[in-house]
Amino acid sequence: MLRIAVPNKGSLSGPAADMLHEAGYRQRRESKELRIVDPVNDVEFFYLRPRDIAIYVSSGRLDIGVTGRDLLVDSGADAEEILPLGFARSTFRFAARPGEANGLADLKGKTVATSYEGIVAGHLADNGVDASVVHLDGAVETAIELGVAEVIADVVETGTSLRNAGLEVFGEPIMKSEAIVVRRTGADAEEPKVQQFLRRLQGVLVARTYVMMDYDCRVEQLEKAVALTPGLESPTVSPLHNEGWVAVRAMVPTKDAQRIMDDLYDIGARAILTTAIHACRL
Image (cartoon, rainbow, N blue to C red; front, side, top):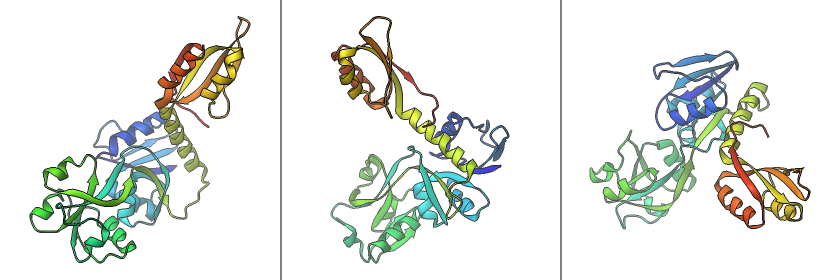
């Protein structure tokens, strides 16, 4: 039975559960449940603190886990990323009072407050910057005002909370994070149950990214139409009862679907439809 760690709370928890449900796996009904078994799929899920998941996986007690790239790096666990999942994206940046620092070199001899000591200390060491790192569990924006540090390193989305605290970001991003699947470093990459799990999640990612597009067009416009909708390998083309017309079916990126429909209409295609893809294997 495949043993999988799943975030039990926080920004990773809900989207992870939704993706696993879309992939056909049973999920818990109550947040108090810490372990459930999905006998149909031969999987056992363990709901753990997101920060602990990489550590459990690296110990070999669990086969794989869903966590954040930031949490994996920060933990220092002997685990590796095997699949990005495209949600819970975030960017880590340095911030300070305006004019205090412009780049990494300006951090020499300073103290940096952060909730991600492993990430920040590693980044500073990799760039040869001699600075102190103070670990705080949250609300790092106040560290500068209270004199705990001259610089902070934290997740930045809009930057509003930093501006409200009189701070501004500087330098290049420390790292970009998102939800990922992790396994113990050196584990069997071809283990069948793990590969099946990854295929299912990849199918969900594709289904979320593409729609199926169907339309009719004149034969003489087919090459132009196919250029607009090449599909993943090649579109399906079928003759219609009315001579000189064909029906075309192809997967197209969801974000481009409306523009492609307009372009198809302009070259004479008609009966243009899109339908959602709920699951797939490529």
